[in-house]
Image (cartoon, rainbow, N blue to C red):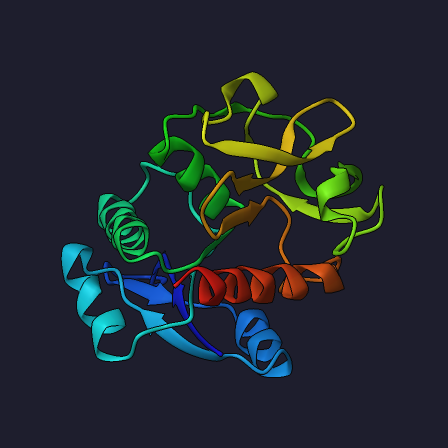
Length: 207
């Protein structure tokens, strides 16, 4: 499986030189899962060149800095999402990736407390029972959340925390899903990989 994966923007210590970067956790995890990554740099609309030369089976929007912090990364990921939408390429979002998908489809975000470097249970929707147990413990590294009332109309809520904040979504008709926890870090769930693969399988059936 070929997976196009976005990168965060980091700054070199001591001088001004923004860099695209990817956690080794992601690279080790993708290798273990049998997925070949295409690392997509933050170059705005030109990012399409990377996924047209080597077409991916799925696009992964990773976590990292909040939306609005780096305009070039925002443009890159919005470009990729819009292209995937037009070409019916599966999309999987992680943390910031879920937030971007929600906003792009008309939802809203808001601040949340107690979700940085923390673990907590989530309540999984029955439709995902093939992927997860009903109340798994997940990791958490975000201070921006999504109240259930702010989810985009085209998305189904597939997991909530105990306070009702959204922890996972799936598009009602397209091969798009996203989670707030991090599958590449300690506390990721085996069902995360199965979910990604199911999006690709669903896309194969409909194309």
